[in-house]
Length: 387
Image (cartoon, rainbow, N blue to C red; front, top):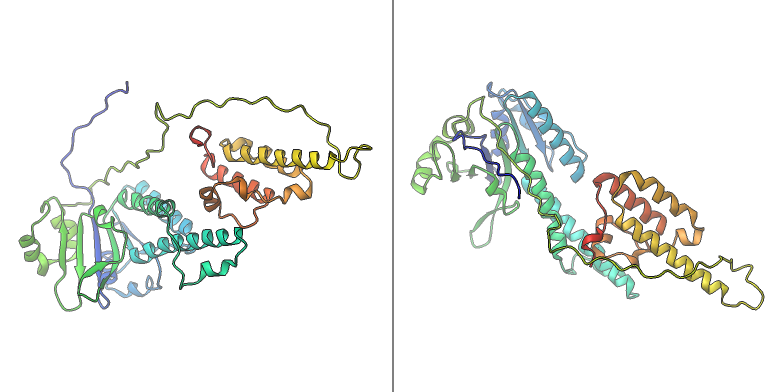
């Protein structure tokens, strides 16, 4: 039985996280830039996702922020946010984070789903001997599978875990749209408001609408209270007065959730080792023994079995220290087997994760699989959960 671990709540506020969503013509980014002029903040980091306005908003009075420079890839964006989080945490003083582009961030992840679904559909058409170009037509709707949604939701969650742990105020900026029937919605992940202590909607003509306010002073403020505060809203007032934050406010305690463990009763039954066939002396097709017409076929069968065994070993490899040794064995095959298409030995989810081409040569699969193990330390197909 695990040892009981508890702690007493402090009752102190943690840093507020504000969602600013606005229609075209509102000045949410300018508000973020103006916040960076606050002398109580040691620094402000600006993450621009999509667009090129990060430099423009430096024209705000007193604005002083550092732009996180990334290459536009998901890995590049998350690496820069993680690096800024590490620096801000180590500094031990209040630093602000402005993310201008939560709508662009979610659109980027949705595009991943569409691309992978079309790639999968194209591969399915190829396997049936059909032209794959139809899968890439914008006029063709392709099915979006659950594993693809799970992938992008995990990516969004990992991004928000860093946002939640930021040691200072956070301003997330997203775009609003109005439907034909007049309904207003925010173009961002559906869970984004759950990560924020306040949500403010901006319109060009009216005072900001306070959609959500859950702070030390206003515990889930009701509709009348939020309506009364509309004319008094400003980011500094929300952060320092309504939220009760000071320069000594602590960062939230964030524990990343991970339910990917094998529990008692979930283990697969032990594998039964089948007796191996007697080893045969390898003969090349060029020198079969006299009268032995089956030698080339036997050699081809052995070669296919060797390829399949190596693919299985690569799928279950989870030791970074063995990647070089296992990968080197892919070079022991002749050119024909190195280029053998192994896509038929892999599951669809594995092909998607590796971004596998068609055909998928053994040598390339070995390289991709070993690189993934070096990066994650995890097997591509864990043996305990193999079905």
